[in-house]
Length: 313
Image 1 (cartoon, one colour):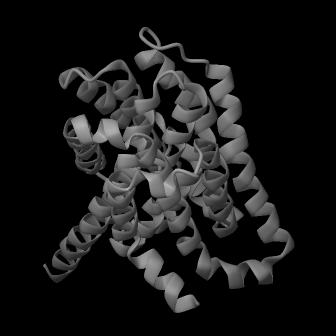
Image 2 (tube, one colour):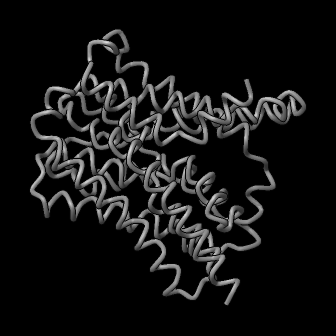
């Protein structure tokens, strides 16, 4: 079983991509999966994140506050602004623009820690940034969404705040408590969590893509391009900001990955819950979930090679 789980987590990007393609071509297969399942599935992912976190993971916040502040500022400035600029630059419809902005305003994704580890980046900084940006999300995600698209779309910040508390913060806190109460059981279960999270994300993507397959088949290439640019520019700008501020290579790698990789499942969940009048707003989050796992795996190899070369020099 552990070998199967290792295989699933190692090939997460391919799994999510194949699921998205299958859901696009055969949407009826996933017809029984309702959008209301997105929140419980995301809760599973967040609970798993809570199980893997330890209170000492947040020590980096106090021991190296400058690094965490730089990373989180980049996270909540670069990605929302990029989303808004790309939506305007490509003249996206209101619902697609909303979806792209939602992705940009979400905190860092859980997969970023794995990619940072594979890239030989500063893992402690990565975990600290993910935790802090997630804790800030109930306030910043609704506010930034309202700030960027509130003129065109009705954004209920209070409802979004409560949703993020229930879907993200509560499961993480539950995971932390579970780990503290049953540490031995948690240690044995942690090896299986990446695979469980991968399957949950794949199901979220399947639900969103199958529900919007017809529209995607007609005009999906533009939004795919925007999603790819959003992620790639985030990775590059995250690295550039960290370099400009004089951070060492391992920290640059961590911040780059944290900025570029978003909790896109949360974006799809928020779109489903709060913007039902804009069904296509769920699509950017699903596409981002597919693409950032592929680009993240590639960037891990690139960053790892760069650091090996730097050591050799």
